[in-house]
Image 1 (tube, rainbow, N blue to C red):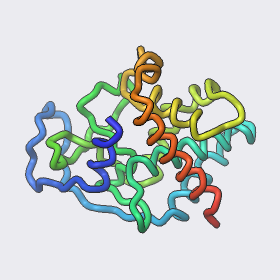
Image 2: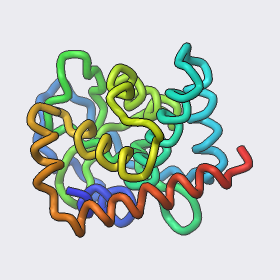
Image 3: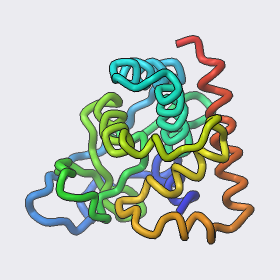
Length: 193
C-alpha cells in the first residue's frame, strides 16, 4: 500500500497507450509530468486552508495533513512530481462515492487508471473536501503519529473498517510512514512560503 503509492508518482512511467479498462464514460488523457517546488505546494495548501472558517488549530492540522499526504505520494529530492497534477497518487479503481465526479484519467506502468486533475489546486481541493469533516477526529497536539494514523484510516476510498486495518499494520511500516510524515512536517515548517 505505502510503497506502491510512492512508486506511481515518483518512479512510475506512463505507457503512452490506454491499457486500463474503464467504462466508456471516462476520458483517457495522455499523461504529462508536472513538477512543483516545496514552496509552491505549501503556498497552495496554505491559501486553500486559510480561506476556510476553521479555527487556527484545525487549519494547522489541515495544512500539515494535506502537505504530508502530498509529500508521501509525490515528493522527490528536488520538489514534488506527478503526472496530470495527481500529487496524491489517487487511482480510480476504487469507488470514491457518488460525489466523485472526476472522469479523466491516465494509465501508469502499474496498469491502473489514475485521476487527472487540472491543477495542483484542484488536487488539494479534492482531498480537502474529503477530509474537512474528519479532521476533528485527530487528537491534540498534532503529531507525526496522529497524522500517519489519520492518513492510513482516511485515505482509502472506503474508510469502513480502516481503524482495524491501522491497528493491524506492521509496526515497521507504521514507523516508516510516521518518519515520512515527520520529514514532511519539518519541511513544511521550514518553508518560506
